[in-house]
Length: 325
Ligand SMILES: Cc1cc2nc3c(=O)[nH]c(=O)nc-3n(C[C@H](O)[C@H](O)[C@H](O)COP(=O)(O)O)c2cc1C
Image 1 (cartoon, protein in one colour):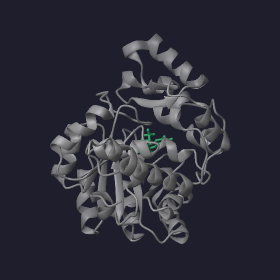
Image 2 (cartoon, helix red, strand yellow):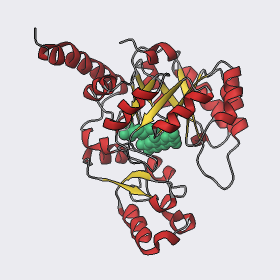
Image 3 (cartoon, rainbow, N blue to C red):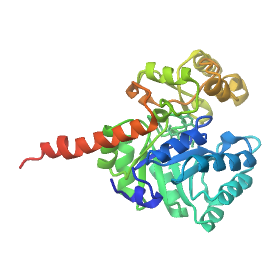
Image 4 (cartoon, rainbow, N blue to C red):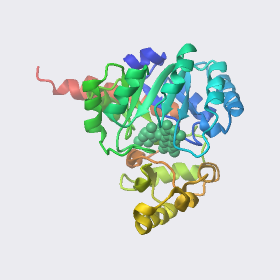
């Protein structure tokens, strides 16, 4: 399949693995890139620019295909060393960066100067247009169903993607709720040039996370996610568990008076305990509604090959067969 996204990033299949905290290590990114998609290392997960440089080096040993690095700009009291991370990306010869969270404008000149293509993840048409106007090469349009931070507009992809297609000139991928060949064909039909998956890639053999997390994804249905931190305007879609129930209880009790410090036990620094140790109730962790479409734990290559086969079958047979002669 050839789209503006496969052309832009020099990849075989129009499938991207979005940055994922404590999931996006070299093993994950390399597996996706080796299978013909675009794998992405999660920058901030590495803890500091030196470790990111090492992770880029490890990834390069595992694949000779293009891969990217995610840089997430989220509200934080002490901002991470972004200039340092950007230096590691440039020095490491990475040519694709996925930005997310906040407007990446400040960092674009350095990235562009180094010949890096930037795909910015947005949850609205207005942010996508802003990304286009400041010189991003592509956007990842993240609908309300997505795992992680869906923003505060709550527009699902069936509306958001065609709206993005109406307005954008740069290519975009559909993100949020994508799992299989049906998702890919639907995304293309709605105007996207490919898809970005987070949650689905966690339930693969190569995902460098505890098996308990993968089993939880297979067991979960589309009804099992919750939105937390809504009152803080930092909404996150997570899988429900004991910690999330506690957090939602606090949100109800404290109402508009709630502050980040009130919920730190449920959201602060919990990822290593969940992803590495498999402590499933340690805190809130991002998960999309797409969990309802995850029924197995294939290798990344099996997953991507299956998606492309399904997409071919749907376009070439099912849809073609519906056209009146
Ligand atoms: C466990 C997990 C961690 C994530 N961490 C990040 C992150 O650090 N930065 C980021 O930009 N997006 C992050 N995301 C969002 C994904 O990159 C992607 O946009 C989202 O998962 C797409 O929705 P889906 O899960 O329905 O496929 C995370 C998602 C998950 C499931």
